[in-house]
Image (cartoon, rainbow, N blue to C red; front, side, top):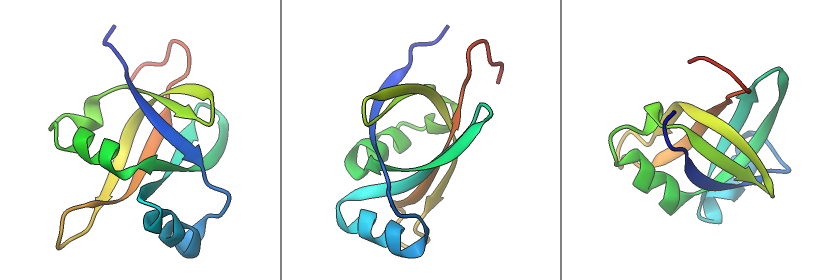
Length: 103
């Protein structure tokens, strides 16, 4: 089994355009955490940490341990939206990986 990389995240109280813009002003990237037969959760990830992971070149095939306010979850990125002009991340989608899940 591959090593999982740790990534810190925060739960977002607001979703939608206004909530995403306020998260970006704080220096974070808005995202969504879904899958594993649980409700989707709006999250925010540190901009610098996610940018470094995207630049590695194998971001969408890396398994992460996402620490959302103290609760750790194994995830894999499923989508990244980038700014069309400046190429910085605007939004990230993560899919939960349950116990014994195959990808």
